[in-house]
Amino acid sequence: MKKYLFNLLLLTSIQIWSQDTIRNQYQKENFESAKNTLENGDYIVAIREFSLVYNMNAKSEIAQIAIKKADSLKSIFRKNKVNSLIGNWKWISKDGNWAIREDGLVGKMITFNTDEILFFEMYRNSKKWELVKTEKIKFSENPESYSFTEFLYANKEIWDYNIDENSGELKAYYIGDKTEEGFSEMVCGNPVLYYFKLQ
Image: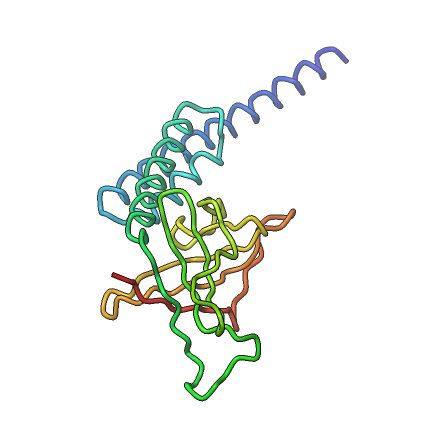
C-alpha cells in the first residue's frame, strides 16, 4: 500500500512539475511576443500581451516585468490623452436649428485640466456658465479596453474622448458601465456628444 501511495505521489508530482514547466515556457514565449509587438510599435496590442503574460502566473519574475511594462505604456497613453484634452470645449448641438429645448438649455461646455473634468451648462435666462458636475480623472481598468484611456466616472459610466484629426472636433462616446461582475458594454445606440475647442 505504501509503495502504491508513493508511486501515486511521485506521478502526481511529475505531472504538476511538467504542467508548471509548460506554463512557464508558454509565459516566456508570450513575453517575447509582447516585446516584439512593442518593438514594432503596436503599443495597444503590446499592453494586452504583457497583461496576458502577467495573468498566466502573476507570482513569476517575468510576470512582474510584464506588468511594469504594461503599466508604463498605459501611463504614457493616459498622460498624452489628458494633455491633448486640456482646455475648454463647447458642445455642438446636432439637433436641427429649429429645435427649441423645453428646459431652456442653450449651451454646454466641458473643461479638462490635469486632474478633473468640469461640466458646465448655460440656460436661456442666465448670463453665465453654471458648474453642474465635476469628475476626477480616473481611467477604466477594463482589460478589454480599446485604448486604455477611457474615463471612469463616479457613477460607474465609462466614456471615451477622441479628437478628430481633420475637423478638430471632440467626440465624447459612452461605452458602458463598470459593474460588480466586471464591465458591461453598449454596442449600439450609444450616446455621443460633440464639442469644439474654445480659444
